[in-house]
Length: 431
Image 1: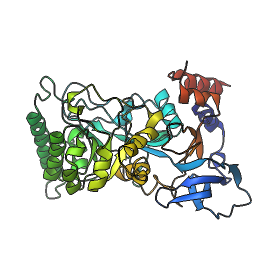
Image 2: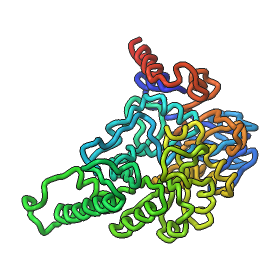
Image 3: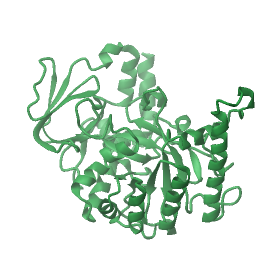
Image 4: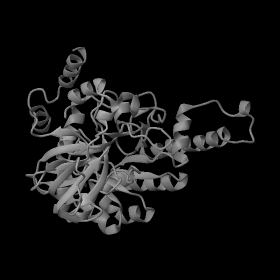
């Protein structure tokens, strides 16, 4: 079901009709549960956006709507730990460290890139500001549902707050003219300086012994860093060269930061150090490297090296650096370079879910988890395989047999036009 149709219908239908009152059963598929093995001729039963049962002997309720998907592969929706879809924009050129900026405030949920990500089977994405700053702002974790506002897509934590991390970077991208750092050493020094200030601010702000009027005034930037220092917000850190990677590990140890390494073109050189630090790594797989000297030693074998060292590994698109529609291909290239098939599939799903701390809800097909899944016409690691359908919480958000959805999958005139969905919504809403 496309964005316009769903959103327009939502304006007029009662909530009960949107809550999937009838169970839906998907039967006959080869099911890749990721955490529980593979099931031949299996059944997935979903209701109210959740997985009710998965297995080979599932008893179907009489009221269930049955989808015969024999001959297809059914697996969890893909988790992209690092994406820029939705025209997201974070910090500006005024300072190298801007933790108060929120990606939430700059995501265009009607952007065609989100539909293309759905066409690639991505159901959850960490939407990140860019890497041109030492700290470019707060990321936002989105379910790639069809919706009218970013709040419709945002994942909320148990306390009602919107889930997300903090984007940091080092290396070439963040080195510029003052006030930005000119060297790697200065980059690390500026980060240390800000975290020391934040430690002092957080301590005083939360000190019950200080009178309210003696505590520091509210500071949004410092509050963002307090969330990092307290462990509430994970740092997603762009880094490429082996020395930059180790600098991130050093800073994480100094300040007790919870970190996910991103990209790590030279991660294969320091896989042991990453493993000993017990830090997970989300990597990008590019089949035509180039553009930056710090990525010259990028290797397809990085995934295999990290797996061998015992590092929790995921893949990401960094869309538009690699296309969301080709996300499955990243894991396939890792397997070609020595990564195990099991880890490759987990790196697209449950491992990314763990890095976003959402693995209780997504990343595998298990009873009680969100009904996020995709249907494929072949093996997920085959270059010939196509995503046929993408479902988020029991709602179909991509159907390759639908001409409009197919346009987003294969390209052509109009595939990059946000106005297609918007104009249809406006027309439906005015009738």
